[in-house]
Length: 129
Image 1 (cartoon, rainbow, N blue to C red):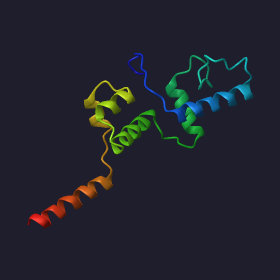
Image 2 (cartoon, one colour):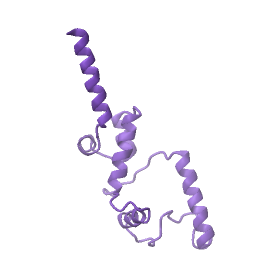
Image 3 (cartoon, helix red, strand yellow):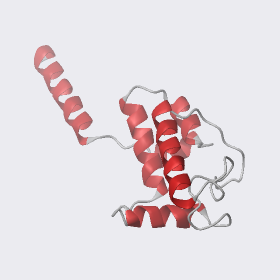
Image 4 (cartoon, rainbow, N blue to C red):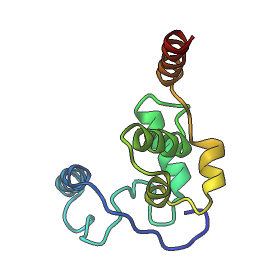
């Protein structure tokens, strides 16, 4: 994290399973002497590689050149909102310290929500008008 503070959050079982598959693939292709139990999962660039550079290379390989890590955080927070996760919980899961930052940059309102709100207001106007 940018603040260099420790960060811990629960990881879904599906993600852990995918990481285990990835580690197994690395072990098979690079050998068990290269991939130890304590080795970083994404260490293509060596132990001193910066996460941002590693992420950028992975996104490029996946054909997502303009994808940023902040895009993933924003999408995650919006999925939390869509699924009714309280803002404070979503903030803790994403590692944000300031609720103002989350509200400013990561609280997108989907167009469909705006349309639904408009329809709701219109139907209430018709029934009370």
